[in-house]
Amino acid sequence: MRMVDLIMKKRDGRALSEEEIQFFIEGYTKGEIPDYQASAMAMAIYFQDMTDQERADLTMAMVHSGDTIDLSAIEGVKVDKHSTGGVGDTTTLVLAPLVASVGVPVAKMSGRGLGHTGGTIDKLESVAGFHVEISNDEFVKLVNRDKVAVIGQSGNLTPADKKLYALRDVTGTVDSISLIASSIMSKKIAAGADAIVLDVKTGAGAFMKTQEEAKELAHAMVKIGNRVGRQTMAVISDMSQPLGYAVGNALEVKEAIDTLKGHGPADLTELVLTLGSQMVVLGGKAASLTEARENLQEVIANGQALEKFRQFLKNQGGDPSVVDRPEKLPEAPFKIQLPAKKNGVVSEIIANEIGVAAMLLGAGRASKEDKIDLSVGLVLHKKVGDKVMQGDSLLTIHSSSEDVEEVMAKLYQSITISDNAEKPTLIYDSVTE
View (cartoon, rainbow, N blue to C red):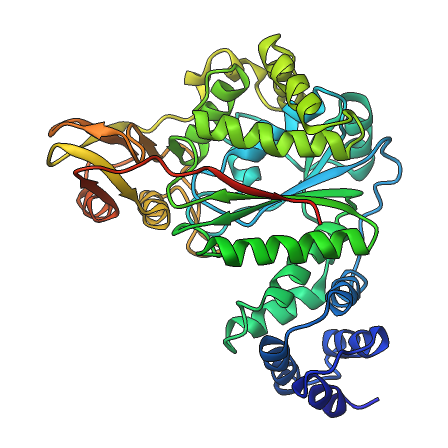
């Protein structure tokens, strides 16, 4: 088998066999196929696309390029959730204890975040003492006993994906549905999930800017999952403005606690109930999405979800008293208001730019070496569709410094006040096939 023949076959729009895809991925991972040939293949895929079967074969070839996590010692259906990213995306912090409290095991592997705010691990480390450095045996024991634990990503998972992603980044082939879908799904499958729920974001703050693109990606990933024996569902949700009100690590933990108490932001609560319902159905703990939602609402109302969060923090060395006393979380010394410059209705909050403003405060990393300030960030007081009067606070800047002129300028550029605007739709669609 020669790589040049496979490049020409895909260039001409013909489907590659499982063996041919395996040859490409294996050879590229080992360094036997050079970057220039892998680039040519990526460009051929970009223009000619792939069939559903090719996408599934590419995904599994990347899964088998490195280590895979064996979660078979954990009882029940292990359901993983993946978001394609956003700003103020606090869902995992709420979902993990919420879904666990109705008996679905949540064995979560998370990384640290690059970008606007920290990853799930960074956010959880806002709680004094919390750590993810636990052994695999301890991880399995905690999930079997209490249904929830989070561990840092370890091992050599999907090295082919890492190598191919870096190549796509510099060859103009990042936004290929086939390559995006197989990249995301390979990581979820290698991490040991039995079933997968996907939150595909769309809008100005998302990678997929239009609903059509988001829907195409969601269908591609759901088909891959179902084809390779992982039950998969997806929702398409809005990320034209930040989710919830908080953007920043400790601030998002506080918002997660509020949500588990039943008085979190309406949009965050709705998204969590929608994704959680899918996880509960896939986990075999409810026969329908309606029944699953009712069960989740019940454990919020009776305090079981909050108690599960308390237990989860304690199990991993965290101070569980922050659940009742969130003021014990890291707090920024300066809280500065951003006043509205005129009367009207908030018509746009550009999620990406709000995220950049939070990163300027120190809430996120521009490079892997950057240290995060867990206390800083933004708390919105107005969302799209809300009326404002001149002088009203649009948001509070939580900062470690009084000098926030650059951040304020960025925020004013990112928030538009007009004569009228409608509240955006939060959830556009659900995808099951």
